[in-house]
Length: 146
Image (tube, rainbow, N blue to C red):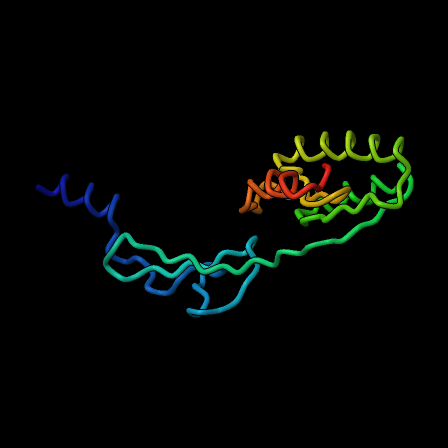
């Protein structure tokens, strides 16, 4: 029996520290934090963990005139910001180039590009949902050419 006691002591030592290790402190409940820093609250004696996180979602309104403005728009998308793109002041050639480029950027980050009005689009990153998929069809039915 002494062997089993030694094995038990080896795997489950009785002199475990009661203090948490440095850097493993649990934040206080209801504390506002960024998405990247999720706070965990474990209920004693259960396997349930409450995750509290707040997200800062930003929407950027852009009105590019030339194709070189598309790089700054792509940087916003890579930074996980939603972009409302107004192409009224761009030439037809630049409109096509900007849309083609941003469709590629949107695909690369698993985002979406949707028309919302005449020459206006919304581009959302993967972490932003878009409700109202029938908006483009509704606009077309009302005479708006997209």
